[in-house]
Structures are given as structure tokens and as C-alpha cells.
Length: 267
Image (cartoon, rainbow, N blue to C red; front, side, top):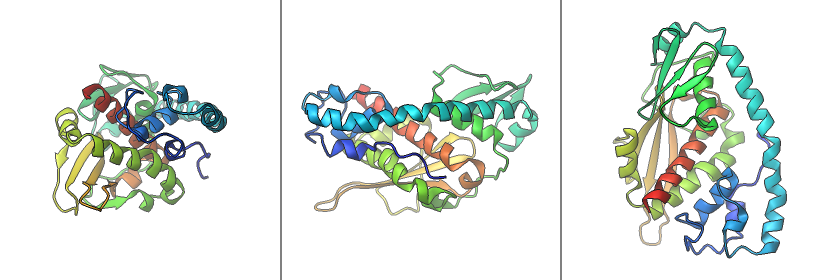
């Protein structure tokens, strides 16, 4: 079933001054638009957004609240499924470790520990975009090892329906962030154990592992003269087997939000 329509960052961006003045404490107007959609910023945090525009956009933003119960129900189902699993076997299949009834999964160099009731612990703050994909990764019925073959988001089952949302909330804001933050990819390499890989027609192709068998590759082409920049996110072919499209989207959208927060603090 197609995802429920909600306001996209570009719909907000079109009504912003697009001056990148940073008075909202974010690096760009597009980053601000993504933060509003994600709930980290309010429309009124932009000093140049008119009252008419705020009222117009607020109507659609209210649709987000209807999605929260569905997210909670999804997590509740995952918690129920975990109780039925042999976590020791799951750990072996999914590149995790197991000890004393707890499965430990690495995400971008950080460990997350999940017990048989689905309770999660970590030295990191556990937020919904981390919790749901990790639980989904543990519970997913099928699993495949990393193949080394890369596919686009639209090639994943359900990707065509989710493609527009993925583009507006993941690839577009990340491209804008890379345009404004030249050191972004160096930060991702240092902070999250990223690796540059050859074989892509891009200025940089960076592989991250948000989950053990969920490699993603961020390909960025910097602007050159009259040519605009371009950014695409690719997935190892195994991702289509190891995680539901909804969880892949949630994972990537959460990563982009986290990168925006990192860039804001660095700037």
C-alpha cells in the first residue's frame, strides 16, 4: 500500500526565502524545510516566512500526527515477533553477536543490545528511526549476505511507490547539505567508519553500514560550472531481501536528519 501523503520538504522550501541566511540555526533553507517535516523545527522559526504561508503549510503538517499510531503499532508487532525468535541463530545469520540472551547489533560503529522481549539498550540515545529498523532487521523473515552488487531505491520491492518521498526526504536534503558543507563526507568517514569505494561515476562514493548486512553507498557529484550537483543513494542488492522498504526509508531519512544535526553543530 502506498505511504500516506504528508508534506514534503520541497513543498515548504518553495515558500521560503531561499537565502540560506542561517537565522534558523540550520545551514540552509532546504535543511530547515527537512527539519520542519521531521519535527525538529517549527515554521515560525523562519523569521522571513509569512503568516499566510505558515497557515497554509500548517494544515498539511497536521497530517503527520495520524502516522504516529501506525508507527507505534508497527513497533508493537515487532516486539511480539522477537519473543518467538531464536536470537542465537538470528545473530549468526545477521552479522550480530549473541550472549546471555541478548543479541548485539552494530550500527555505524555503535552497539545496540536487544533482549528476547525486544527491549533495547545502548550507550547512544535510542530514537524511533533507530529502534524500528533494528527490530525489523532482527525479525525479517528472509536474509542474504552482502553481494557487492548495487541497486537504486526504485529497484527494491515497493521502491517505485516510495521513490518520491525517498527523493524529497533523503537524497535532496543530503545533496543540499553536501553542497553547503564541503567537509561532510570526511566527517562521515571519521565518525561512522565510512569507506570510499571505486567504480562509480561520482566525485565521491562513500559506503556506510547502518546495519551489518545493510550497506548503503552515497554517490555525490559536486557542481561544475553550469552543471548542478547530484547525489544518489544506492543499496547492496541484499538490502532488498534483508529489510522491508518502509524500514529502509526510515533508516535513510533518520540518517539524513542526524547528518544535518552534526553539520549544524560543526558550523
